[in-house]
Length: 96
Image (cartoon, rainbow, N blue to C red; front, side):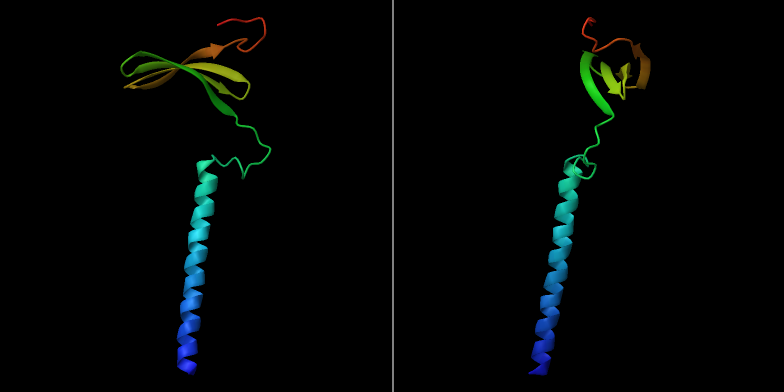
């Protein structure tokens, strides 16, 4: 009878460990799919894509906000390049 209880205890313990592993994977995927937003509660994103414009296949312009700065970035199959910083974007009296 003692051997049966030992096997049963081992199986239950193994089931708990496997369950804990699956639970940990689920929680990690949950946080990863939300861009760490839940882990960094109260912290605003420092970078955002404002707008993109496709010029032709493989070439595009991207307006990106990084912190308080707005930058115009050009991308192509060869890579990317900072084309310039946009002054006054988002001001109530400015127009783009």
